[in-house]
Length: 513
Image 1: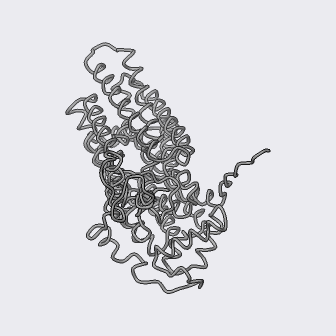
Image 2 (image 1 turned 180 degrees about the vertical axis):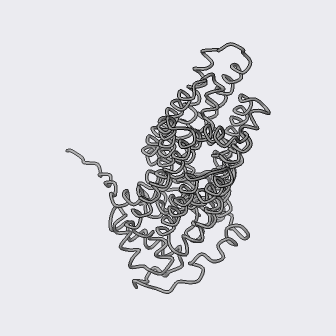
């Protein structure tokens, strides 16, 4: 007798489209990172500025984006996730235009300010909106889209560098930076066709509108009902309430969440906060933005002298990053966040240490060491591939899905703020760092940080694959306890007056499925 296994639900095309459009705003950060790596070569010559000014110019956008990421949390609770995306595009548009028409260094820094604020808004809101609109079955796949578009933007920036490098120096770098205004206009208009986040709608008491969106973005009617019930519970709305519009408490509009997040967090929320801040911190401390922003300099240190060849080599970096992130999107919901993240960081540690060794060999030899040059190029590509297949996308997936509903916008904005602050420090100190401890020493330092991050992820980050957003607080509240049990199976279980480790209550208390 033939047996037909249950079919997997088809991917929800409506949710896919919404996630795609929302995530495309992340292309702004990627484009700026990619294009600045090449534009810096020409800006330095044209404006006659120092290496320190170049460091500040490259990294200051990340510090400016802190303003946007913090403001986006409150803005998205006030006017909604969708209109916050429009705000991000408008602000970045102003920044791109100012940079494209800059006449001096000070004018250029003003443009960087507006671009940075716009990037901060986009980085915070894109993963939050995508997580809130996605069904649990494909949330990892869809929430990884922002990182896909960051990498796509980096590739576009590198290609733009190579394309505009043939123009006179005075016009070339201005064209590279100014053309970033074009996608911001297109995206700002397109996102108006997206629905609002169902979770934000519930927070405003608009249950009828939320139900309509959930019906379209869920894999089945039953799932839509379950998701609505979970969101209502998290928002403090009675489950038996069937009105389309209800009055919600003042807290549901985002007031006092900072107290619950930072001053009086529950143990579970504290764990969530440490996990979110930690993964954003370590993502940038691994030196990825140094590689993206200064890849032409790194290739020069590795023995490549031709300016056009260096720019072409950076295109290879962008291509490898983009291909790797595309692979990662299909693995997130198949093998899980945790195994993919730990494997990714392990690859980063090995490639960074080997790259540092190759650069050290080159630095200590007067003549060209061909094998070391080839090794450095391969390891640089291996590093960006390892990063993009795990650490890159999982950071945004994780931080957008683990916070409780009423804390999600501000919690995610705090994670982005840490991400941008760390990135700003790393990118604004890279040239000074490698001049102080050599280029090889800088990458040995990044490898050491990556090793520490692996340990942190192993002990602090539980698997979230397949969990509903409303189930995360319970999961994080039990994770440390589970690790302790796994390390010592002889510890008596405190559950309903004790009992053995194999008792029926263990599964319930641990929150496992």
